[in-house]
Image (cartoon, rainbow, N blue to C red; front, top):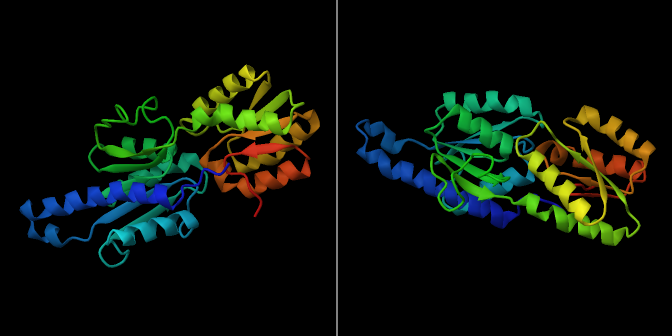
Length: 265
């Protein structure tokens, strides 16, 4: 399964963003400083595994254009991506706040958490938040409250279906390794859901923490030696960024593997 947002998801998110920008511009003429009325809105784009340019950011730019916003003409975009290093995200969020952007597009859970810590006044648009209510990002899905709105990806609810498909593909499977990223907010819920769903299906799950590219080779070498019957890779922005390497390692160790964004390029 590939969890990359398609064009429709990007358009939905940009609809929220365009609304936020529009409200800012409508409010501008009522501000004492007349220069604000002609100000080009500045958007901060904060992500873990989405560098610019990329298919995701290109779709974002295209969808903005559909709403009448052209980068470099009537909107400016400040691109910030951590390269899969979650520890860098808070500093990038603070940097965007210091730049006084008008709105922050936060792509993933680490970005949302960092943006909310950095500001309680700048509007934040979530792209694909994992379990935003339990994560404390919003008060509820119907009424988010605060300065945050956007979209949610209820990926934890799909763990059972993924394991069911894996079981159908490999009926003899008993032991399933579940690589997940403990360094990213919200991923523990995915891992726990996978663990519970596996037991319901009569599978024996083994949670395997992997937080960076440097750990991948060792993790797959260990799994290759211990020979689980299958591998279910959990979603994370680091796993998405390194999806090609994950696919290569799974193939080289002959491990049947299912993932949310695992593909060979």
